[in-house]
Every structure is written in C-alpha cells, then in structure tokens.
Image 1 (tube, rainbow, N blue to C red):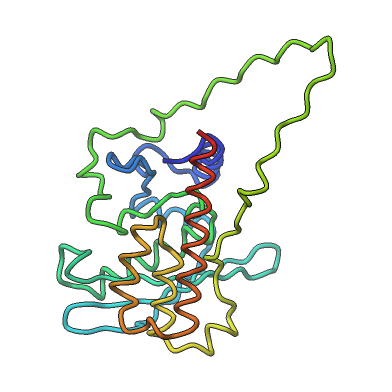
Image 2: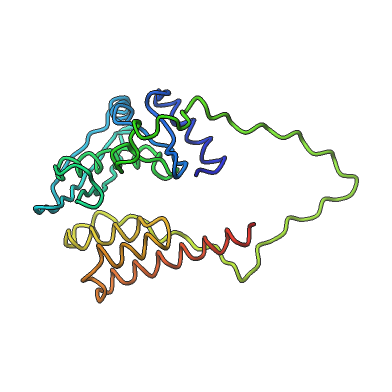
Length: 246
C-alpha cells in the first residue's frame, strides 16, 4: 500500500502519461497499483522508449530475460536494465521465455519512468495482477486525494521543537542500489540474477525465500552473502522504524 505522498506522485505520473481507468487498477490483496499491458505500451510510445531484449538464461522449465529500456531527455540518454523470470512456480503458462520477456520489459519501463519506486507493478509481474482477477478493486479515478487540513492556529508561545528520533534507531539507507554498468559487465549473468533477487526483496520473508531458493549454491560467495546481509539490515531497520512510529 502506498503512502499519501507516493499516491500523489503516482497520480501525477499517470496524468503526465495519459493513463486512465482502463489502464490502472488496484491489486485487491496487497493494495498496490497495477498498470496493464496497454498502459505500459502507452507509456513507452509517449516517451519514445526503446527496449532491448536479451535472453539471460533458459531451460526446460524456466527462463530469465534481461531488458534494457532507454529514453533521451534533453539530448541525454537514460538507461535502466532489469531482469524478468518465469518458471513453474510463478507462471501459470508454460511459454516461459515469452512471459519472462513481458515481465522484464514492463519492469524496465516502469523503473525508467519512476513508477516502480512508488510500489507500482506491471500486469505481467504476477498471475493475480490481471484486471480479470481484480474486477471489483478500486480504479484510478475512484481514489480521491486526501483532504487538505486547515492551518493550525498561530501559537501565543514559541512552538516546541520537533522531537528527534532516538539515536538508537538510525536511518539505514537501502542496500538495493543498482550495480553500475562496469560492475555488471564484470559479473557472470547467473550471479547477477541471484543478486537481483536478493536486492529486490520487499520483506524479510521474501529475502529468506530468495536466499533459500534462487541463492542456493551461492551462500559461500562473498558478494552474494554481503548483498543478503545488507538487504537484511535495511529491511530490519525499516521494520524497527515502523514499530517505533506507531
């Protein structure tokens, strides 16, 4: 579920990219907003985004595809790369390469345009994200912005300073920053896939699942272990901050 600030930013992006009720809906279970395939293509065309596709790995029961989305802003090229995967556990269809391509493409476009960081996903990311399975969920035009609170009366005494967070609860920066192009070129693709799964974990449970699943066999690798520990520290700190904020 997005915060009020994220929702405001999301609505602004939807307006700028001409997305309407048919393009955007809310996932009933998580509350996250989903953009359909037609909406993704609308974003791509409106912003002249070029997407390159590369098969990273494939087998009889899985496929991993790498997508590179590029757009030019004021004569400067901006590029974002992402991975999409499909296997028997996360796809109800058996044409894994095609599904992995759709996921990588939509994810790279949403990351490039700033949607992904707001907790917005493409329809292809999961089988239960489809519009057909969320018919009764909220649509973009159903979500109204929060009312603006009236200004507080002017105090007669100097206002007290805002409370500071306890020193024992530090803010921990995200460990999920993307690797530079030079670093990516130096890493084998299978290792890059493992690092991507770890760094994209949204909860400690997802991180543990990735560690026992995709990262199995890499536990003794220094980079992989460090990525897992960094992400674990980030998620644990955010969980602590959320608890103190209640």
